[in-house]
Image 1 (tube, rainbow, N blue to C red):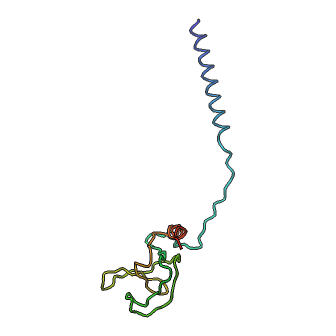
Image 2: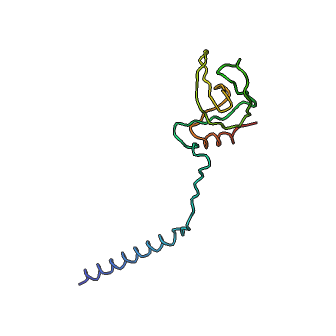
Length: 128
């Protein structure tokens, strides 16, 4: 008889502990508010695999018409500009060049990133 009373008391203690644990868990969980996730599709290639992005790291650089320093200038860009890489080439001196819409830039002028957001993050850390 004493055993049954003992086990009944243990069951009550176990139930009480379980109740306290569940209540503490429910109280400690933050209430979830409904969140609206907005997808930014303004630049669908920003995270596309196989599309590289360049960050200009030289204060002022000229786009070239071809993969040589002697070729004509097609325009200019500045430090911190982020550009989508269209193509790559290697010149006669084994230097890599990157093609952008306005023209070519040498590998010494840019840093290459696998997505636009990495390039943007790196641009915020560039020192003037």
